Image 1 (cartoon, rainbow, N blue to C red):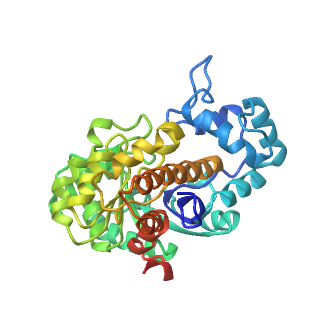
Image 2 (cartoon, helix red, strand yellow):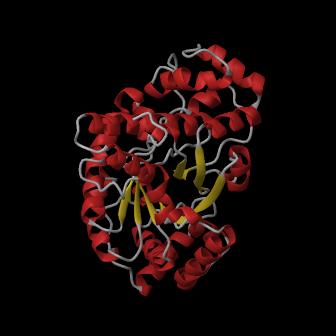
Amino acid sequence: MNGDAGPVHLPLVDHHCHGVVRGDLDRPGFEALMSEGGPPPDGATNFDTPVGLAIRRHCAPVLDLAPHASPEDYLRRRAELGTAQVTRRFLQASGIAEMLIDTGLRPEALLDPPAMARASGGDAREIVRLETVAERLADDGVEPGEFAAAFRASLARAVAASGAAGLKSIAAYRTGLDFDPRPPGAAEITAAAAGWLARPAGQRRLADPVLTRALLWAAVECGLPIQFHIGYGDRDIRLHRSDPALLTDFLHLVDGRVPVMLLHTYPYQRQAGYLAAVYPNVYLDVGLALSYVGPARAGEVLAEALELAPFTKLLFSTDAFGLPELYYLGAQVFRQALDRLLGERVRSGEWAAGDAGRIAHMVCAGNARRVYRLGAGAA
């Protein structure tokens, strides 16, 4: 489209991301954060990946380098500028006006939402991770028979203290999405909690299917949008158990009660689009997949997500973690992919330019502002 109303020029609401690292990074540390697979094997580099080439092409100019700068020149310039300035440059250049930040992963190493807001010049709200609340409660010494009520109370306090915009579940990592969708009974919860809480401190990673169900139904009672990790992630996930179609029975039970946000979704973006089409309370994004497949393929992934999904159901996210480059790159690749997709529809005569512009506004920010009730822009 490339007009003033096109995606290239619109502010974005990043409805799912994480914080940026606080400290300086050496090359191994930087490369580990470039990939969901972590550090590269001996003799290889994560710069030789689609996202590695995209960083050199699109991020180098933000650091006053020519496109396609060598990894050595890129990292040298990054060190010269320092972490704080690099973070400010990328976050402010991204055009992301508001971030909804999942604080449940390595919070001690990352900027918190207020610090992210200061660095970006925009707004930031927290997304509370259910499993983190439960694991902190376990460390506080809750009794098994009190777990369900104590978790609901702890979740309410966490939401109130942070002004959280939503909640998140990583059930896809911990139990898979093929769980029993029904709320567990009190006796089930107590028995499961007794086994889990009996483990030594430091080994209470919540991966019990009964307790996972208890967390999810407490989240439903809370009433905020619930984000689910779907599909692509690090090697801790079992990909075949993260297909969003496995949530179908759960979606039937929560239909109309709370918004359900399907994050990332690759390689299940078509399944996610279908669910968004048939359930009024289901939404999706394609998240970090666009950065990791690279600009050459991002348009196809986005188009597949929109084959069935209503345009009111697609949101933008980066799922950026650690590297400020991933915010900037995620925004750039998304804008370009959406711009090409909408432009093709207008040039073919299939869509009117006014409709394409309206859809761009919805997808870039309007849908997120409406679903998460982010203020005056939500109307």
